[in-house]
Length: 299
Image 1 (cartoon, helix red, strand yellow):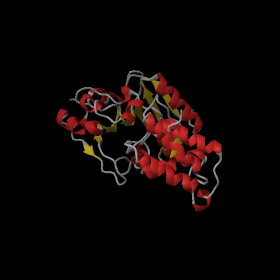
Image 2 (cartoon, rainbow, N blue to C red; image 1 turned 45 degrees about the horizontal axis):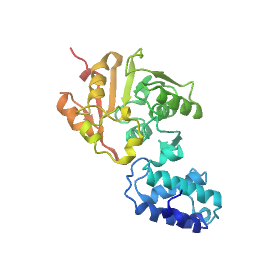
Image 3 (cartoon, rainbow, N blue to C red; image 1 turned 90 degrees about the vertical axis):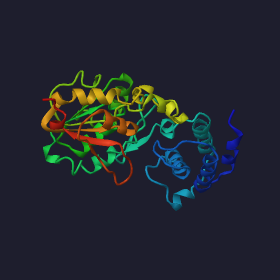
Image 4 (tube, helix red, strand yellow; image 1 turned 30 degrees about the vertical axis):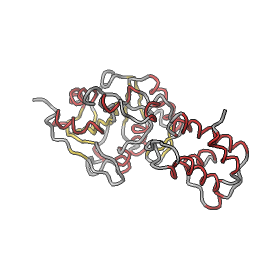
């Protein structure tokens, strides 16, 4: 039975009225944002964009368009999942955006939200000379959004992406096909570097990094995401440690590692006596470090 809180939707006659009511409904709930939208207003527009099959924010003329009963029922279904089940919107719509492109997502993979998108959009400048990139490896590709975005940004670069999860591999392959990149990005099942060969000019990764204590206090929305893609032991370093230790043989002489450590950034700096360069982002985000191959090698 549909929740009575959503009855106001039945009285909406246009997308403009629907946008207003959606925002009011979402504001009344204790929801967590951060899986693609940051507030009830943006999330309301994202719902309308999905239902109207639009890739852009609706303009004034489009907002005047009339609603039908089918749209109203779909809205209530979305609200039920978002409010009652605390499901993040991208899992409801199966749509997430990264580097300005749409990717398919479901509960087998994390929802794309990494600040690494800004680095890709900037062609990794000033950290990397784009002409020096020949091979790139992404560890833990999930939906494939990072590897596929790199392949689109660097048409002449060979890109390899790995994930230990066969479910994630399925999603990444689906996205590769949708973007016409199935022949450009090699997506392989691998426990970190296990099935990887050759050397790379850039190794990039957004591994699990959430410490056990923080895992216990995450908002309900995170419970829909794969536990194995978030949890990383007592200090959040279980996977980061392995990546930093195992990366050197896979790096070219002037290669670099870019690693997102998120809430484990402080622990990473304390644990490893390495000259990490922490990257500042113009459009938000933190916890991403760069380190050169020469500083990873153990003499």
